[in-house]
Image (cartoon, rainbow, N blue to C red; front, side, top):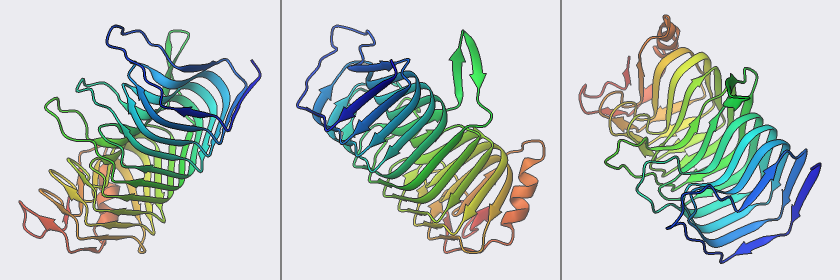
Length: 318
């Protein structure tokens, strides 16, 4: 199918129940399409309790979602799932009051992205969502029974807000991550993250840039605001504020493990954060000598008014 267009569509007060089935029954499936366009779509007051996605995109070249309003939903697994796409663009959209009620350790997520070459989210808000990861994205996918990995994919957030989202701790050691991202080049520009229970986790990636962004009053196990692990290229923090975040364990604002190189400009501020170790920033691990450059970049950093429980007022733990 060449092109599918959804314009000014409303899904309201739909109830489903999966108590007698485990089949993957997507409500709407787009497969082998050239382009899918959502414009002015509203989804509200739904109880979608199937172990599948509300909207599933498989082998779609271009996905454009503009002015999608999603609110007051109960989902069993995923809201939007994308498996292999050339381009995904989401703009001027709102995801609000979405919850999962299951206690099973499954990847509950609002956006689940696998094998998307270019992802762009702009002017979009995630607010008051409960017990669900907001975005999971990986550049690893299956093609003809072989595991493939993009080496030139991009993931961009521009003017995106994450506010008062909660991923509570449980007894199954499930990661308290509101975002879980893996890719080649990831850029966060004008991202505002506040009062979330869960970290922004970036792992096994190449280059990460966070600029003109604000992270405040967030809480997580490791990296109160952001957790970065196994980054083989450069992490750049530019003109960004990390304030009053808290980590239960390491890195009140930032947790970095096996990071090759860190660039932290003079306009970025880390202040008022708390943790057990590394009240402001925690740098640990090795990656073929990776953290040598990360540590060197941090030694001149002015990290102010941080609190550590173990090492007193040592703002920066290396």
